[in-house]
Amino acid sequence: MGEGLLYRLYRRRILKEIQALAKPQHVAMILDGNRRWAKARALQSSAHGHRAGADKIHEFLSWCEEQGISVVTLYLLSTDNLTTRGSQELDDLAEIIENLADQLSRLANWKVKHVGQAAALPVHLRQTLEAASERTAQNSGLHINLAVGYGGRAEISDAVSRMVAKHRAQGGTLEDLADVISVPEIAKHLYTVGQPDPDVVIRTSGEQRLSDFMLWQSAHSEFYFVEALGPDLREIDFLRALRDFGRRQRRYGS
Image (tube, rainbow, N blue to C red; front, side, top):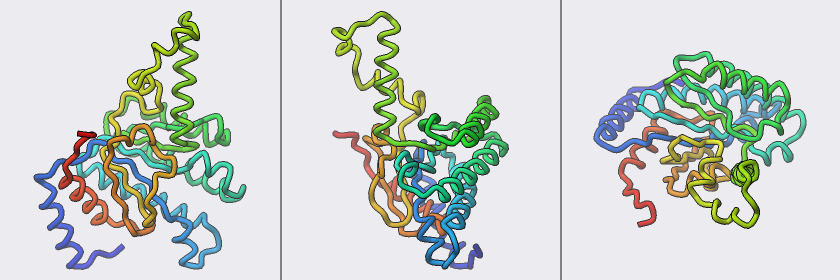
């Protein structure tokens, strides 16, 4: 996208404004609106929009890296999508996500991790995500969570199931299980264990809902909604989100 003089001046102004502001460590992104983007351009299938959205992700991650963000979680395919989208669209999405995961795992020093229910995914997509995670396991740069086959409620359910299974394996009984269940213990069994919770959740396309995304981790997150459809997201939209975040007073329930 071409950048005119006014855009460049405005970008420079925002960059100056955010220099002294606190920045998020972990950004969670719902890049929404790919299908509407394709429909608005009278393109033959939603796959064109999903590919444009995947291309935008490369840009978005570079913006995050430039601003010193440590962790980015991208909501790419929900558990609900797996049952509500048509078979052709799911096939297209699987191919697009495979290509994206493979490309990201070969760039810079980025660390790619799949978060979600691997067993629910097509075999080839699952294998590609596993390979991307293994290939980048020792990298120390930007940490990228690819939420694929992901649902926040499913994640919490899986965490409790793993916790109960561990308790049984250690000889625990049903009677003393209640003493084991706690917020910190459940957190140890989430897909994102060991990572900071998202400081800010950004969603494009004007929709203002979480759609089952990081329900546990976003308990104290800030939210920022962008009117632009996913493929139309601009760097200044992202910078404005950072500025908005930096100006807020985070209270954590106090």
